[in-house]
Length: 356
Ligand code: KG4
Ligand code: ZN
Image 1: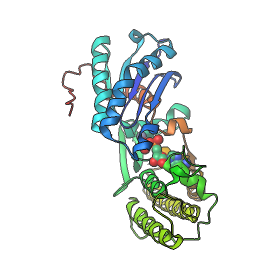
Image 2 (image 1 turned 90 degrees about the horizontal axis):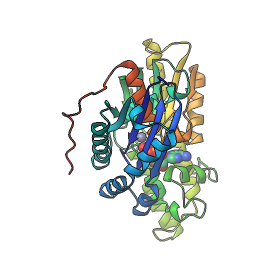
Image 3 (image 1 turned 135 degrees about the horizontal axis):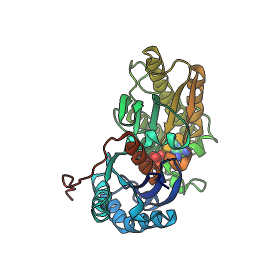
């Protein structure tokens, strides 16, 4: 048990999460409190509400992660906590809690970049060497990056506006899918995926965005507006009131999911070709890691599989519980940083969180 042990804490958005992970990738303990239900009711995250819920839960969640791990706090090698990017009010709760904790325990502190943690999660499960390509697609994230080392990322593309999950959530809300008997408990993206199976993607002609752009950036707000117009027109045609579910909802879901999948696959294809041509990725055994809540969409995954098969890449996805926000990825990122000897702080005096 000379293994390094890290406690990871995540509060960047709407999940209060903590975990204890060891050097070999064993998850010794974990706990998570999701705020999704509360935010579904308000139709989106209200930052001050998220902050309040993090405050109410952080002590208990960290305690649960520690006690289920049977690790005594004095045995920890360090505490790792997400410090950016995310909602400032939410991040602040995790950061001030952690600063108090490391002060009490006299342990090193490892500030974590949330995207780095998402990108490195795959290495907890699989032997994936640097460099590899990562695609992060969720409600808050959309980026393509070449991961060259623990804290060495080359950003190849990002969304110029909103993230794909955000767009799917907005479309689902506009379609009132929360009132749909089969979808009422699902996230917007999951509801779209579910409904799309009952629809015909060719019923509406929704074009993927940025088809001519010679880069690896993304855009989803145009798609959202196109769908919005279609819905408004269908509401008139079908003579239904706002809030009722359209007869053509499944066709709309199928078409928007198809355009989303095409767009994501096309940008990723460009990134793979770019990296291979420049020898930034191995020509023979390149790896594409796809993570984030939207990565659990099987239709989008199929589209990515077509791209990776055609370019002789290996496609890897962490399991859903590690794709979405969690404490394990933060703790693991702490382990990676400890091993690489980067960004481990023994003095946190300079770090202060200014509450708003
Ligand atoms: O990673 P995540 O839990 O949280 C962040 O956004 O950071 O991702 C949540 C997002 C939501 O926008 C949700 O609608 C979307 O992922 N999502 C999906 C699916 N499941 C969740 N999008 C498409 N298809 C799904 N099956
Ligand atoms: Zn995330």
